Length: 287
Length: 330
Image (cartoon, rainbow over all chains, first blue to last red; front, top):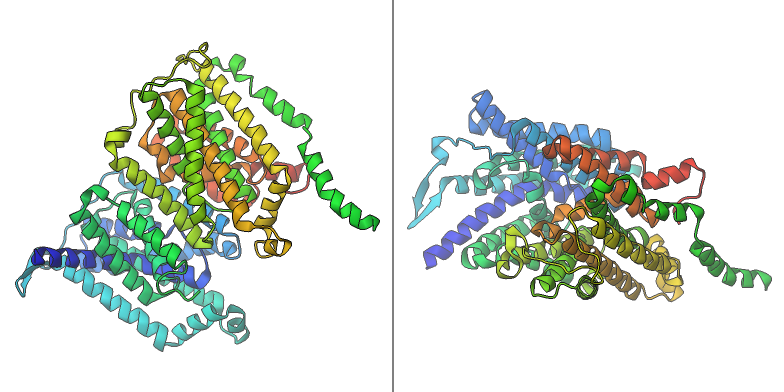
């Protein structure tokens, strides 16, 4: 029983960490630029398809495809930002929602055109398959890999925001955009870099997600809700908040599906609405 | 002194002018009768368009006039549809009473959720409407014993309207019935919008901070309009269940809500006829394009959205009005 409980916690944590990598970029763009980017899942999907294509067509090893997925999603996001998003920064919520839903629809159709609607399998290297035996428990290697990747990303993000010049510029731009501009900070440039990194992380998450949740053209829609839950629960622009919210969501989703399967996804929506009413700015939100 | 009196009189004059029927409006409603003669083979599609137009009109009340973004409006359409379907399956197939009961149930749902809706803003509002919609979808999916789950609600049989007009295969009664309900609902919505209440909704949309200073109870106003919109969406859902004699789980889905948003914005939000025009263009386009290749319909849909947001901020009707040199939206 205790072993079961621990297993559910572990699986939930691994799932939560995956959600964290997928959605932390959205939290940053929403928090920093106040831009409701519902197309975040499309970047994740792009990363996933890049990973699958490189492994199948070019025989790249799995680990090498991960940075490639990051770069592809980041590059695509910069192109999209230049072409479409930039002029919507000051537009209404509704325009942003509509434009980005439009991007999601187009990306879903393009993915279906290029790859068909079937699930895309991915072949993991041998050292990520199977279980390791640790203190009396069987832990999936891939899940351990996911958790450690997420921890590395969190630490790297925290350090770069707290300790680097770029991080200081971001914090300044978020706290007071006009003042930051007045001090000569290139706010648009900082935003563009931040947006690219956030979308790149989504691409990386999309590649990492294939083994856990699969990949098909509906990915961009199916996980959008999860991203938004993480972001709105964690509080906009808060990395620690996203981390905690993603872990909470992952564990409660897995536990709910394990212990009360008849409720399905109902439970997490209920939790989300309750939390949003209690704290509309999120658990760690400042506003 | 004279000036002050003018200021008081102006809003009433404005509303009275708005309430007067324009020749173009009469022409539009007369044209809705044309399909009976011009396209008698497409009456089923025409009835679907009328139902969707009513659904879009209901969203326009909250989105176009009150400025509340909802990504979960299908929840009310679906609850109306399921309610009407369940009544008919339980053995009471009389359409008009079923329609009224379904409308009332959707209104109750809307009133209950409106207390949550008015408390949140911006991203939280989008999330809460999305979450409520998804919750209802999941609930209907799980309650297979009641709703039929994924297979949809089958065995809905509807008696003839007023005991005379049977639902035929060609959709004569279905279109006539849907069109009549749409017209009555439109008259109601038009009256609501061109009342002092409707004017206060537009004021809330334009400046939410200033309205309380005028003594307007924002939350009560928003709750009222949200309930009305939910009721009309429920009517549309009930019409859909009765005319197709089937309720799919898809009526509650997020895609349904998103598509609705698309057609409203395509037509032009905040101008009553925007939802109707959007529904006509959207449904006809889907009928044509989906025949070519159903899988890629979403591509065209997405492209339409991007183009409309980029180049036609007030929708097609807004663009037309600008071309004709009219003033912007009301």
